[in-house]
Image 1: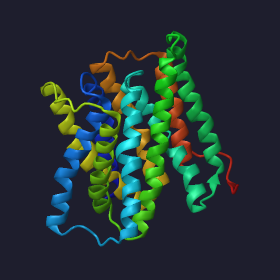
Image 2: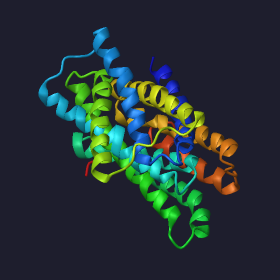
Image 3: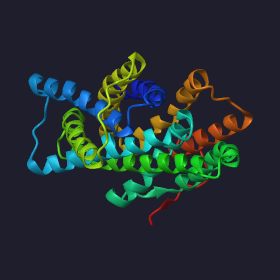
Amino acid sequence: MNLALFAVTVFVWGTTWLAIAMQLGPVPVLTSIFYRFAFAAALMLPAVLVSGRASRTRPRDHLFIALQGLCLFSLNFVCFYNATRFVPSGLVSVVFSLATLYNAVNARIFFGEPISGRMLVATVFGVGGLVVLFLPSMRAAALGGETLAGLGLAALGTLFFSLGNMVSRRNSAAGVTPITANAFGMAYASVFLAAILAATGTPIVAPPDARYLAALGWLSIFGSIVGFTTYLMLVARIGSGRAAYATVMFPVVALMLSAVWEGYAWTGATVLGLALTVVGNLVAFGALRWPMRRAIAS
């Protein structure tokens, strides 16, 4: 079961980066994110309630479900969508793969889990891989620093994603199933995004073409409903650290699609940087052995 959840999550989320890039254009970023989760909530919440699959929740639970929606279904995507304006979507997904390291640190902060020595080694590989990947782009970037802006936004979006993982762990421990938390969380996120649209005066622009609608459908149904449900089921079953290991594989799928659809050219630096990032994640979750075995307790 865990392997199936892992495979579905990797495939679905590996493709969403390209779909996000396909939505960039006349429709404002905030509007696109609102469309995505409003559509997903409109499909998922009634289905969960009518089918009787919604778990029991208390008013306090809904506060945390709303917080989960804020982190996983709104603020992180504001960052990710804007990041793809500055750097290829495949490279954004590589930054996202560092969610494994974010989760390890946040699990230490919020749940008291020790950070193993392997995480220090993994950090060296992961950060080193990102430097190799982004250094050519940074050197060629305009004076406005668009590449740095894209990198920063992707990193901030990954932080929100990781914080959402922590809230999801709390919700699962309280008996709130991932399906219930996602259905209500997407609804709360939609309300929050609508409020932001109104506050900022962002226009509600109609979807411009079939390409945009196809991307919206894929992101809402598969990227949101299916992808987040399978991923958070993994978080509940095997923990946030091991579940985030799925992000190791996202860049492989995303960079392949980016090469075909966005003209992203693979170079020796791409291969080396991606390899270092993957090795870092493999070390982090025990797939490769390393000499350090003592846990870092502080």
